[in-house]
Image 1 (cartoon, rainbow, N blue to C red):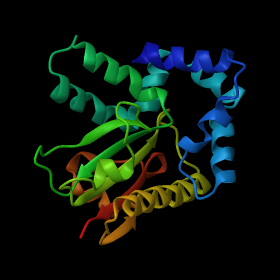
Image 2 (image 1 turned 135 degrees about the vertical axis):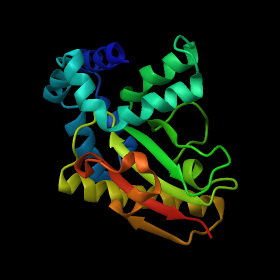
Image 3 (image 1 turned 90 degrees about the vertical axis):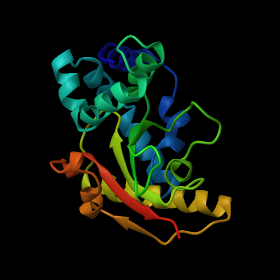
Length: 210
């Protein structure tokens, strides 16, 4: 995973393609212009150089907010180390814009749902599908930058607006309703593993179905 992170950002640093333009729609924000600003900041050449130059210890430290949850999830989901699907899962996590962790209010499986966001494994994969589709009654959604870096206050507000917009779009498309959306750390108590969370490095939204 550490090698995949470095290779990913070195590729971004070296490319001449306008990645920010191509990936702007992947960012959570309340408007098109805000998404474009976030994309340009994230894929800025200086930021790419900074990420590509991190050593293994620094990568581990910056990814820690979501990595400490992803590693136990990986072991539970993929079993023994050496599973190729599990290796792919870990390698792909830090190569999107975000890492998404959903703590379902109720779950037959009884655990977290962790993946890169946006995902590219299935055709329909958005926040609605992850938290509210099927028999799900909702949950607490945690969004981390894939780099693990903090959100500025403005980025956090923008991300909440974008998350709300995307959830409501998914709900409208499915022809269903929700009981409510709540923002902030009040959803933290749903899972004890998040008790010591750094709230500058995560955006939390709780959503409940009827």
